[in-house]
Length: 229
Image (cartoon, rainbow, N blue to C red; front, side, top):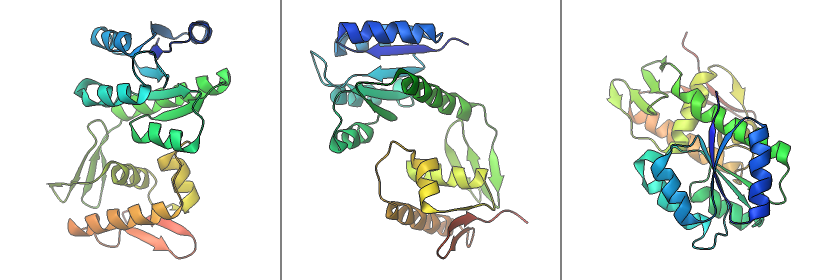
């Protein structure tokens, strides 16, 4: 299958270099050199992934990304920011604005290809999965809906990702570092204690819906989602 990439980059030599490389990897590439062109392209096509520069002539990539995310058609569009802004604060800003990944220039083309493939796998993999069900908990991966004891559960995005991950790997023990890597991803900058906070919130919500002692803390080792007996 040939995937479509929308490449938003104002620097022509860089854009042409990326175009040739991505085409050599069998991607269909649609180009835009500014924010206005990017929005016009999004009105005409549904790309599989968006490669977005930060510094554009008519806007900045962060503003453009926030505008794109407001459109319900593009809420789940995988976005990889590709920019020379390499400070940690810039990366956090990009990820918080809705980017799924962040890569700084000068870019390794091999790494870029690997990250694109990972984002596409993630986006297309979830849509084909079946319901996950355990102990009264049901997850619909395609629509990202959680039902607990026949009630629709109100949980945050990261709580959903944690619950989904644990239910995919019942009975296995994971420490904080492993959860950060597998759930948050290597390009997200958070402290290990953040895991504890979100685990506590998820456990509290599970208890609220009648699921008790399912998400277990193993002191000094990590966390485990108890498998059905």
